[in-house]
Every structure is written in structure tokens, then in C-alpha cells.
Length: 337
Ligand code: PEP
Ligand code: MN
Image 1 (cartoon, protein in one colour):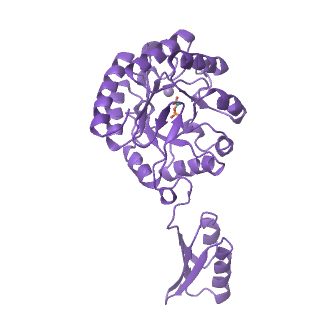
Image 2 (cartoon, rainbow, N blue to C red):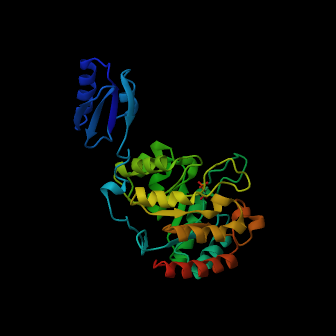
Image 3 (cartoon, rainbow, N blue to C red):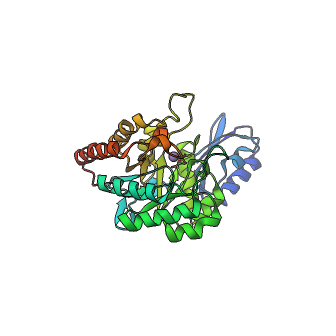
């Protein structure tokens, strides 16, 4: 961290700032110039609040050299994190495919889709039981009954299940029943939920918030990791921009940025990113091409009558072709599926 202080700052003010920074267990060196003096802060500065330092009237500028997240940063963990989920792996050389309906609607629907996506080669089954909907009048999910159906589908297919958690009171149940606990975009900054999920042993799929920066996403991962759970999978699912043609704007460069900044696996959800079923396949391919560690795709057997997100769900036949294309691309990129 670098702190720029005005040259007219009284000596004792400079000393006061210096001492305060030193209490954070950092080494601080002072360089004095004609117009400014500069404090160079070396060490673990994650405990220093930039705004607190900047609040001093003589401080011109405070710049972080190091990122404010530590556990999620590649700086302190060079190798890619590889996450084990039952007999499967996410991260490293592996390419994970998570597929299934937006929400669990009934037993026949989830069982049929689970079998179909498995047949096509998906490694994980997704399905919302507790749904975070924009309108309180929209279908809110089958809740606990939906969770039971997902478990049944896992029994039938062997596919690990991925489903979204909405509140802390469900944590115990999810830890017991779910293989990967999803935190939806709307809850990315629900810090109380994140902290509690930091205490569980199951991997967390953390989706990027609707208007969250890459740094904010990584800070949310840090919340989970700082409580002890280092199994975090990040998910780019599109962000809100001025463009309205698509539901969101898929930020593919975020995949590259996250891979550079962090060791955590990152997957892409082209369904929520575009909101349009016919864009899902090309965007999924593009995601694999830029180096995503996986994709999460909404698949529905009857999109027109889906209770949720039918417009962005592909049919199992299309998913089959997508899997063939993804497999071919994965091979050429030397990724394991
Ligand atoms: C979902 O995956 O079902 C979902 C609601 O996604 P998001 O939180 O990204 O909107
Ligand atoms: Mn959905």
C-alpha cells in the first residue's frame, strides 16, 4: 500500500499515520519529497481500511498494491484449486458440465431430465427448489419437496446435485442433502449467509451479482473462505448493462480476469447471461474457448410450459449436440471431461 501525504503536513501528523499503519503489523517506510511525502507499507495490509487512512485531512491518496482479498488470491496460492464432489472434480484440467431445469417442477420432470442430461454426458444435475424470483407472485419453487425430488434423481442417476440456498436457516439441511450449494446472484453480497456457508464442508457455487465487479465477487468468495471453507466455485452469469436485447451481458473477459487474479475454479452460466435459448450453445462454446472450468446450462423437456426460465432453456436434443461440440473442443484444449 502506498499513502501519499501533503508536504505541509505537520511532522506529528505524518508520525501518527505511520504509527497507525504499523499497528497492523506492517513495515512502513517514509520517503520525503518537495511536494509530497510518501509512506510505503509492506506486509499484510488486508486489515487496513483504506477509507480510514484517506479520512486524514493531509492524506492525498491511498493506493493498494496488493488486492484486498487474500485467501482467494492467486498471489498466495499459485496452483489452481481443484474441488472434489463425490466421484467428480471441478477445476484444474477438468471441464465440468452442470445441467438441468431452472426449477424442479414435479417428480416426472426432474427424473426425466436427470436421466437425459446424464445420458448426454453431464457431470452434475442442477435444479432450483428454493427460487429467488423477481416477483413475489411468480413460482417460488417446490422448496423441501423439490429437494427430496433432487435427491431421488441423484439416487437414480448418480449425478451430484447443485441447488440454490436462500437463507441461513436451511444450511444444516443443505449440508446434509446437497452436493454443491449454490448462492444466487441476488445473494452474492448476503454476507451473513456467506459467513455461515464458510463453516460448512460442502463446496459453494458462488454466482456473480447482477451488478457486481470482479473484485466484489472475489471479496464475497473471501467471506466464505475466511470462515474456513476453501471450496468455492465462481460463476459468471452475465451482468446488467445498458443493453436490453439480452437478459444480461455475458462478461467473458471476467473468466480470464478471475483466472489471473484467483486460483478458484470459474464456470459460466450462458442461460442466465443471455436469457435466450438460441444463444446458449454458442456462448457455452465461447466460455469453454476462453478457459472456463465448466458450464452450467438450463435444460427443459418442455420449455414452453416451464414454470421458470423456459425462454432460456434448451431441449435435451440440443443439449446432446452441445455436449458433442463441447467434448470435441475440450479434447482440442486438452481438458478432461
Ligand atoms: C439460477 O441459477 O437458477 C439462478 C436463479 O441464477 P442467478 O442467481 O444467476 O440469477
Ligand atoms: Mn433460471
